[in-house]
Each structure stands twice: as structure tokens, then as C-alpha cells.
Image (tube, rainbow, N blue to C red; front, top):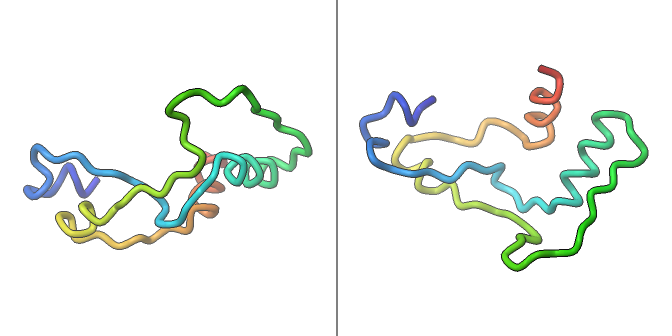
Length: 83
């Protein structure tokens, strides 16, 4: 929402992220725990360009929009899944 309201954001593109490295398998494990499921298998042959781990830089958004990280990724995921 800050990017909509800020003049500093006009014409800019921002990464969003949790501020910590996250693997797909870690994300799957968190989803399993939140849903109370034992098995969620999402394996396929890796493709060229697939990311093994993601840690987007959110420094541009922090600098131009004067934001701070307010959410712990797992808590945000729990809230999102319970909407």
C-alpha cells in the first residue's frame, strides 16, 4: 500500500520478501504444519532457471518508501492461509 501512496514509488518496481532466505521445501514444511497435514508432495524434475532458495533484496523499498519489516514470514503465512 505504501507504494501506491508514495510519490517516491512512481515508475519504480520493488521486490517484496520476508528478509530471510526461504527454500521451497521449507515453505512446504510450514504449510504442512499450518494445515495439520502429514503429506504434501510437490516434487518434479528441476528446470533451467528454477530457484533453489530465494532472498530478495527489499532495500530499495526500505529506502524509497521508508518501510520496516513488520511481519515474521511464518506468522504472515498463517494469517494469509486463515483468511
